[in-house]
Amino acid sequence: EPEVTQTPSHQVTQMGQEVILRCVPISNHLYFYWYRQILGQKVEFLVSFYNNEISEKSEIFDDQFSVERPDGSNFTLKIRSTKLEDSAMYFCASRPPGQYIYGYTFGSGTRLTVV
Amino acid sequence: DQQVKQNSPSLSVQEGRISILNCDYTNSMFDYFLWYKKYPAEGPTFLISISSIKDKNEDGRFTVFLNKSAKHLSLHIVPSQPGDSAVYFCAASEGWGFGNVLHCGSGTQVIVLP
Image (cartoon, each protein chain N blue to C red):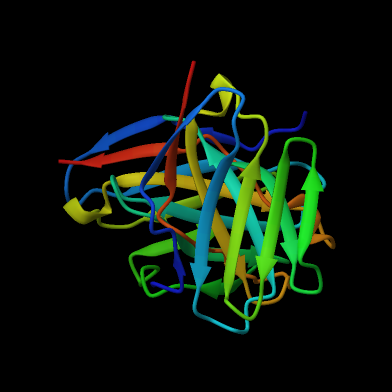
């Protein structure tokens, strides 16, 4: 079964450093998302991406965040200057066009720890 | 974002019995609802969905019920199996366009007892 692949599975970084989280969505999917889950809290929407553009973004997705699909397969989330409160599990997701009945496919996540 | 609420943080059920998970929402514009299952250290796995034009959708052991007037949905798992032990969260979306946003509940931990 096709998967959404995320790397690395765990990233530790110092506060103020830049991090790039990588995702390879399912190849025939057209819509891409980043969500995050702070430990003990709910899964929260960050950003959606379609046709090489951001479609929607949440309040969390401020100027420190950016997304890119540089080569038609990878989908990256960059945090320019990490803060302690950015520590969370970050999930990439993708979905095909059309039917809601297939939902989203999530990756297994990247655990980001900012120290 | 408290638009989707799961008020039961955990649920224990005997193997073979029914698990009933509940979810409430406040935004009357939500028209697509999904349930996901999540094991520790893994990403959420899509289980089942329903649109607002239906009140029930069934897929194997999983049935989702939607009560639009009460802004309430539930997931029934029958019969419950040990492998069902996981966190389940419901999610809702306003529309299903390319930018759609999933608003997620906080999850219910299901423990299936042998």
